Length: 149
Image (cartoon, rainbow, N blue to C red):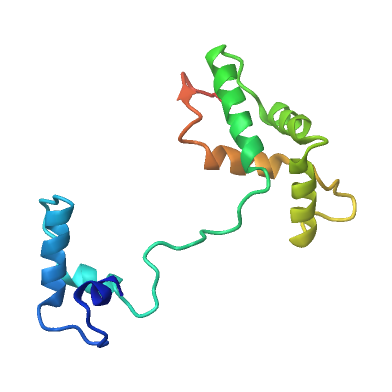
């Protein structure tokens, strides 16, 4: 669609050599020296397809609080006192207790029907901790065989 508006045509068919012209102009514009093949562009430009998806899944209701926990984990790692699973879960539950994060988490758990009747809504569990470590593994560093998280 970008190509159609750039060249001022409203036809659904592109003229012969249009992809190569587009590639040349964009390579010059962004100063790219590598070769870009036409089939690559052709496979990416499809009717109605977005190049950058608007959403890559559900946003965590704890996103802001998780950033604070990452900072705490990094500091604890620097003083050589890494958090274990139960400490991490307890710390996150203390961080979110009585805040909008707890209410957002409770609402999220109810909407997605997580847990059973005995499950305490508005709290995180060991499963959340595994996911947290997976999501932030690029920021939580492993040194000397210890996981600083």
